[in-house]
Image 1 (cartoon, rainbow, N blue to C red):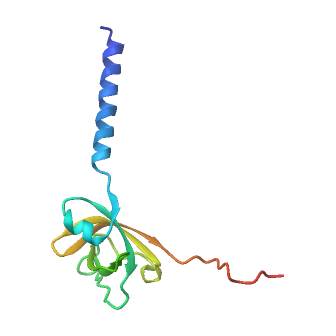
Image 2 (cartoon, one colour; image 1 turned 90 degrees about the vertical axis):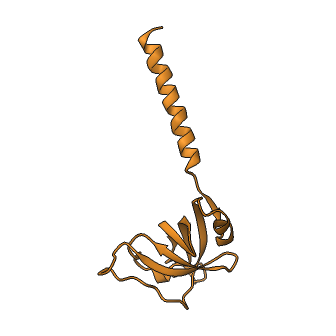
Image 3 (cartoon, rainbow, N blue to C red; image 1 turned 60 degrees about the horizontal axis):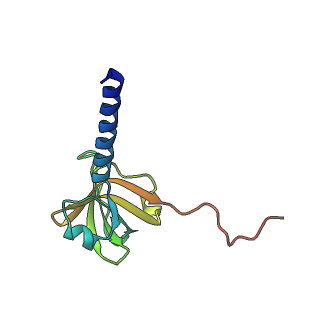
Length: 128
C-alpha cells in the first residue's frame, strides 16, 4: 500500500471521528420541564425575563456570575445562573435563549442569546 493511501485512510477516519463528536455535543430546544427530566443533557431554553424578580449581579464579588429568573414558553419560572457577565441592555430584551443545563434547582447557562426590540416600527406613518 502506498503512503498516500495510508494518509488518505487516516484523514477519512479523523473526519468520521469529528462528525461523531460534533453530533454528540449538539443540544436541542426545550422547555424547563424537559431540561429537568434530563439533567445531564444541554438544552436551548427559550423564554422571557421575569421582571418581577430581582437581577443579581455584583462584579466585585464575581464578575462571571449573573442570576435572574426566566419564564419559559410554557410559563414555568426558573432561577438562572449565567456564567458570564451581565449582558448590556439585558432588561430591554424581548426574548432570551439560554444554552445550558439543569443543576439542582437552577438552570446553569454558559451562553445567552437575546432578541432585542427593533429600532424600526412598521406602524409608523411614512415621512413625506
